[in-house]
Image (cartoon, rainbow, N blue to C red; front, side, top):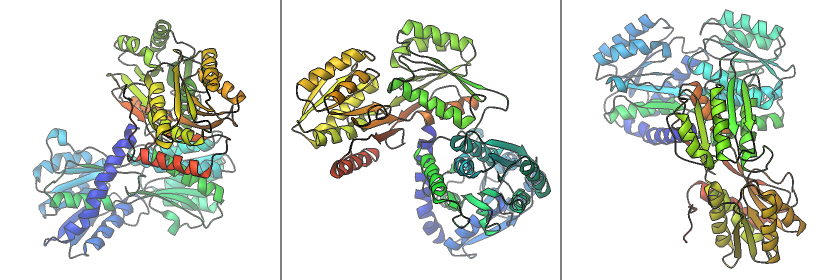
Length: 640
C-alpha cells in the first residue's frame, strides 16, 4: 500500500503542475529550448519515440516551434558520444537537456555541476543526485510492472498452447520491470502456463530479437511480448507465425494491427510540462517523476478490439488494470533470482480455515505465491493455533534460525516477544499486525476496520425488523474493536432508534462462548448480528438457526452461510505481502507500516446470497464511497 500512496501523491503533483504548466509556460516571452539525447530513432516504435512524441505534443500545446524548440540527437547509444552531445547543448544555451536512458547516468552526474543554470533530466530512475549537492537534475521513472501485469494477465487467458515468450533486451531499467510484471500477470490468470524469458543483450538488435522469438515459437509459444527498439524483429516473427503480441512503450497496433492485442503506452507530456513549469518557477531540478496507471499519470493501456478477442477477456484485462490502479493488486518490481526460493513463515493464533483473521492472511500469502510462480519460487511455512505468546516466540525464533526471509507474527499479542528477538536476527525481516510500530527489520500492518464496519452497520440499521442489533465481540482491542466501533456508528447513522446489544466474550477463539452470547442477544430480540475474530463461527450458526442475518469481517463468510451472511468486510493483505517481499528483495527489511482502507482497496465489501433491497444497497455504496474519499470520517474510538 505504501507504494500506491506514494504514487497518488506523484499523481497529484503531475496533475497540478501539468494543468497549469502549459498555460503558464506558453505565456512566457522567451522560447523554451529542449534537447533530447536518445539511444535510438524518433521512429523506433518504442522507448525513444515515446519521448519524442511527447515532446512534440508539449510543443504543440505551448504554441508551436516559436514557443518551444526541440533538438534531437538520435541513435546515440554510446555514452561518451551522448556526454559530448549533452555538453554541446548546455554550451549552446539549451534550457533543458534530456538524457533519455539509464546508461547516461554517470556522464550526467559528472557534467551537470559544470552547467548550474541548465536543467538536465534522465530516466528511468528516481536519482536526482540531490544527496550529492546537485540542484539541476530531474529524474523520471515508469512503473512498467503495472502495465506489464495487465498485459500478462490477458496473455495468460489468451494463450492456447500454454506457452508464452518474453523477448527482453537487457535486464535493467523499465524493461525488467515490465517483464517482471508481465510474468506475474500470467501467473495470476494462468498458473499452468509456461513463460519463456530470454534477453538478447541489446536494446536495438532487431535480428537478435527475431532469432529469440523464433526459438520461443519453436518451443510452443503462441503469444510474445518484449520491449525496447529491438522489438520490430520479434513482432514480425510472431505475426508470421499467426500469434499475438503485447506491446509496451508505444502503441504498436499502427504497424501490426492484426497482431498486437494490447499495449502499455508511455505518455511523458505531464512530466515534460511539469519540468518546464518547475524551471520557469525557479526550480532547476531535484524532483523525481513517475508514470503509473493512476488516472492522468502518464501510463495508459490500449486494447485491440478489432482482432476477435472475446469481450470476456477484454473485460478481464480492464479489470486487472482497475485492480492495479486501485491497489487491490501489487505487482512486484523485483522477483527472486532464478533458482532462488523466497521463504515466508507465519505464526498465527488460529487455523488457516478460521474464516476470519488467520485465513485472510493465509489466503493473501497463497495469492502472492501464485503470482510469483508457485512453490518453486515462494515457500510458505505455517504455525497455526499458536495463541500462547511464549510458544509463538519460540516458533518465530526457530524460523529465523532456519533462514526464512520474512517471518510474520500475525497477532498484536506477539509484539513484545517480536521486538525482543528481532534484534538477534538483523538479516531477517519480520512483520506483525494489527499494529503501526516498526523497527529496522520489522514491518507493521493494520486494517482500518472501522470503515467497513460503518458500511455494514448502515445496512444492519436499515435491515433490522425488530430494531435490535447484536454484536458479539472478542476482546476490546485491535481491529476487532475498530470494527465494532465503526459498526455501531453505521447503525446509529441509518437507524438512530435501533437498540445495540454489545457483549465481549473475552476470547478470540471460543466458538461455544460466542454461540452463547449470540443466543442471549437473539433472545433479547436481535434479528441482526455481527462480530469478529475466529470465534464467530459459533455465533453465525446461532443466528442462522434463528432465521436472522449476519454481517462479517476479516474474511468472506458467505461461502459457509450464503443465506445468512449479508456482507463481509474482507481484508486483502496480498498487496501488503507483495510490497514487503519487494522491499526485502531490494534490501529493505523493515521500517514501513501498511494500512488497509476502503480507498486503497485493502478493505472490500463482499456480498453473500441474502437479497439486499435496492435502497439498502444504494445507501451502502454511498456510504462506502463517502468513507473512501473522506467525506465521512468514522471514529476509531467511541466516547465512554
